[in-house]
Image (tube, rainbow, N blue to C red; front, side, top):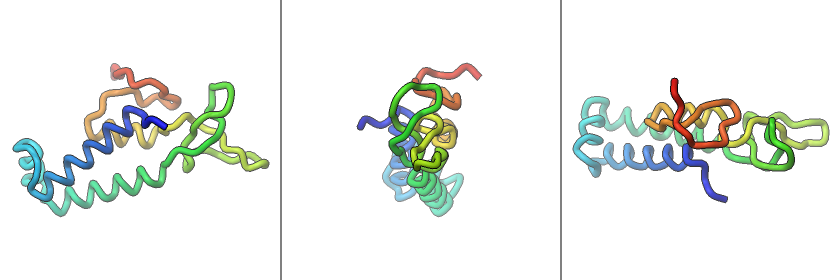
Length: 119
């Protein structure tokens, strides 16, 4: 399955921040680490990676769409048959995390596109 552009962006941003905190990044990235401190940056990266792992995609019925698809395994709700229903993956939590790291796509609750948002 191809990752949503927001998830790809966030994963790459975390990888770059982690490398910079270890002293292996661009001057801009290393400047960020110097200002915030390597330990703080590594804690931030670890926390966001844990949130991403917690909000993994799951098979279910995305709201507003007909048919089976992919929902957030954490944010979706299960019906009495155990089927998951909820916003399409990635969920709003993942999209907001990506935006905090510089992604400029939509954070609408059922965001299926990577089009930039005009906020």
